[in-house]
Image 1: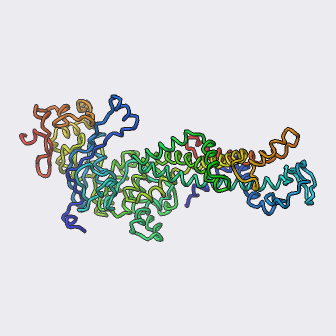
Image 2: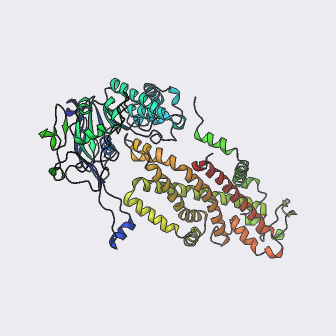
Image 3: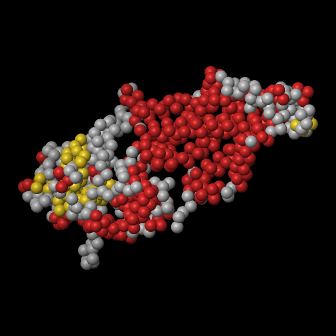
Length: 339
Length: 292
């Protein structure tokens, strides 16, 4: 184990950016050569993000769709190489450098959103769960079936699932299989990318409770990505709010939900439809004004200034940095310091 | 409860189509007699010493000088047509299966790898294959057969070169679709090496369309070989394949000696139709959009 691994930091993201250049096809190139206009701007899905997750901690990552939270998750999980910056898991770089970057560590594993797409339909469950562990020598191939059965039992599935195929299982069961596959690699960090978003509401709670129970049991560090504010509050120690590729606020879950400092966080929390129980108050909620700007041409300065109710002139010029806004809390807003 | 493997389920569904099962039986029967031709054929049509010119161009049912009946007649060299057809089927099946199998492996490897790598490698490979596919396969096979000369392996090489592109394009399309799916990303993020991901995940999931193409292309290879032999570019005269038997009998068609061309033609058609019928059923079963 490396030195920084023992210092209590499981995930450290330093200045990570990810841009997606548009695929310029041959026909487009010819069109461009002939004077046509071709989209060449790249999308900055993640823009200079730095954060740390302590061992055993769960960081919730929240934002509207298209804000880059899934891309950040994929950077941490070693699925995508960052365009700039570094990502370390327990002190080790997640991906190699070079033209064809490869993932180096098995210490971070991922749970994907759609359990109907994330399991190979032509593989038996036992092979799905044990494939990685056998390849990386965590278990001998002779013991693979027993090893898979053990992890399936841990996620609440019968060992007789081992010789069966994914199509024989429901969405909730498939997500349990996906969890077993990730945990069978004995990771320290688990990236959960909307792990319950595609499940029935009645199943969501079961899968969430399973994740919480396993996190406690295996002392897992988690990056929990969701657009659902309630779910994130339920599972997270700390939360980070993303807007157009940047983290606008980060802090302990209770504090951020109780005293949001960034106008975007405030608007996001206020926009959640509330159940009104005392009858006379009309059930109304305030949606955030305007649309999410195109990530192809984000507004200058603070990305949120066009929709911000308290924007100052400098907000459209100067991009605010994250600054302290209370114990453990930070927000990227020019107004925070003066407040 | 262990579930039946996909193969077992596939067979259960396949059994429901009687035409396909009958066609499969025909293919198995043809493959068997082709394999056993040297032991069940009354005559060795390749042994010129055993051919008797007095028996030439005899109609079906003629009792020849060799002491056995020529059930399908004889050709201009006095060959027993039944024996010649059995040996001809042997060559057709051998060449069709060998060319199909080699083209399958070559094309699938090329198409799947191109789809996995993406970028410039994918573009170069696939544009070249598109270019090749813009020429008719028969033209390419003709030119190659003329360049390479006669012989079994030369013909197989010509057929493989003409046909691998169909496999490559199909494999590329299927693999590109699978490459983008979450389970491939999950395997890569474990991490599993690219080779294992291609062989264990992408290829098995790209197989259904490839199997369909394979059945069509084996039938095409057999037809192409017959065409080349018919045109005199295939196998040497001493090893008559079905195409050459048809060509040899062609000149006698109008003089009433129909059997020299017709029976090898019937054998060829039965084989190709049977393969295509099985291929149709396989395609129907493997196409998820046609699933009931």
